[in-house]
Length: 389
Image (cartoon, rainbow, N blue to C red; front, side, top):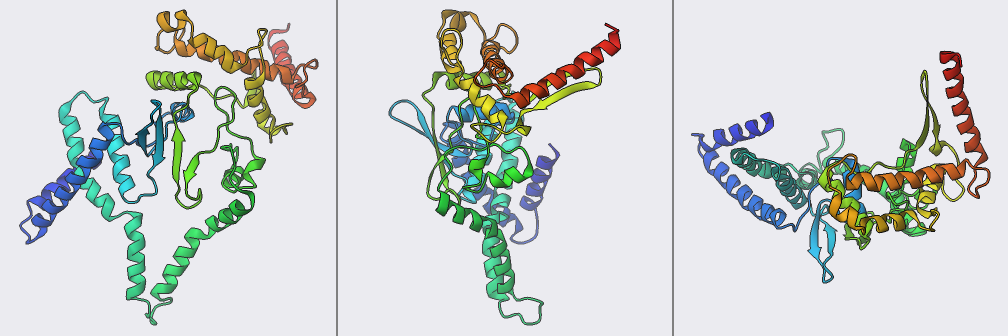
């Protein structure tokens, strides 16, 4: 990796420098970096810390539904589960912990020991640089600058004025969130945002509750994380391993196949000669949620089959069968466990959207039914024009 090569060259140049003090300083920094790296790497190796969110967003979502949390300490509980405490608030140490945990996760897939050693040696020097240039120390430098140039009358603004403007600007958005949280309290669910305006709304208590909840693959709303301290000021986020066997199985399969499970489709799609005609459920108002998309996801988790089973019930029955446990494989594709689970999820999602367009269903939506008919007519009209039938 070119960047790592540059770091190694910079380290070598400093260590071999003939300039008085440069080599000694480089050795000292390497010693500090190596010590910190060794401690952080040990924590990651023994599974005490976690790193950044996993690359595939669907895999990460499945893991988090099962209670896993990125950038956290993992603490075992008496019942065999784990509780996760985020360390993001602990700058600049959090960067070191995250870097080491990510390194451990990446090198699990390396076969060449020399590559691992080269990567580790580059990290030692990168750690010292990261700690030295972190935003945490930058904030301290800004205060020292204000103290040094606080009475500088020759500049357009003195050091204290610059510091105050910078500090105020960094906290202005948070002030609105703090005020809203004091009035409305914490939102019980994680919220979905479908545009930039909603992305802002989801951060503000009171406004966030006007948005759809996020839903897991079982059609259940995702609860908001718990915290130690205020959720506004760099809280310690706390999660626990779920006791739900289905969510655990989905997370395990996502990790083993590296694919994750597909989210509920926002758009009902109908092919035609010009591409597709879409019926976007987020564009229709919901009855129980902000949009029909929220209603459809919740309905997929509440609707029952001919045996009175919800989606969660059907999947719990599936993963408990002998065929599922002994005959199916974790490999993605037809015949695999993930394929079997996704097949049942798809059936319930189809039933949910079908109920919204079925006049006999209590969940019938005339506006969505009309939009679906219009999309279907576009398809059939294009088909007739093309085939003459």
